[in-house]
Length: 415
Image (cartoon, rainbow, N blue to C red; front, side, top):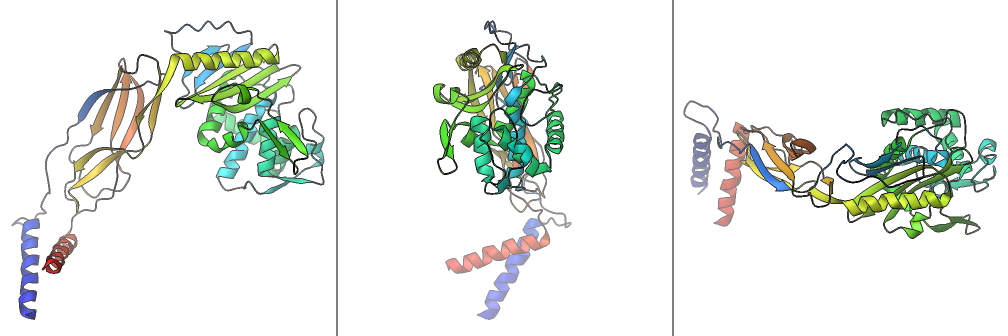
């Protein structure tokens, strides 16, 4: 019996080797079929970077400067003096909050960390919660105070904790501004109290608002608070952004006002998957500030919609692999892809799927094997990489023997 089993095993190995290798010893190729290169279909949505010219943009705003962008793509939907340099007031704190969130999300600090208050922080004027040098608040509590009531003392305390001094923190703010392409921005402080040379534009504010909301979405836990308390209920907080209470879908973001800056606002909202950011600068009154932000957001939601095109991990195709231990591998979308589009034009987008020919093992998981390109009227409006869902090792003598043995033992178990 033992000799019979051994003979059968050796026969399987011999057959396996001869099936997998040619007479001259060259490796067997599982398939040499070519993969279709282009698959063009009609799909949804667009992502123009330019201001759309086919929609009237005469909104008759009284504010000195304004802009409306689609949050995910940054597409400009409306602008009015968007690159005029003006004083941002406490809208400055969007950059401060961004750096705080980066520190949290990178693990440098945690929401539970206790933050002390210096004499400098406690002496800040303007909006504040009257921090005392003897008390500490957690990062969570500091963020709540900064986002809800624009607390100058809290933002300075956080700046000093993170970088040792407010001055060092402001250096980081300006470095981040440069990184984001905020070319018309210079920060002189982290809170926004008027200071010579402390200036930005509605366009630049939109850029940093977009960065904060996209890469640190947890911030909306704070920016959507209407009323709350601190210090065991002893300190009441009411959001300075009235849209949080009155505008459907509002997600934030930050108000600001001084005697020189007048009334500023970066307002964000999401409806039916479409996320917008409206920035108002130098509105003559606080009432006009909120009315004109609403006007911008209403304009965006009335004229645009958001279409999801590709979902991360979505299987686009299974393709054949040459010289691989597996004959096929799934090609999947690397990222989500969604675009804002003018209502009524969602059928004008063309999707082109391109996948490499003659894919040869080894293939690593996540290796780029192709891409999807979206075009509108002949212009590219979006692109997604297509990647391998799994690793595929190159076939070897050892892998052949292993495969044959596995099949042989499987057959014995069935018997």
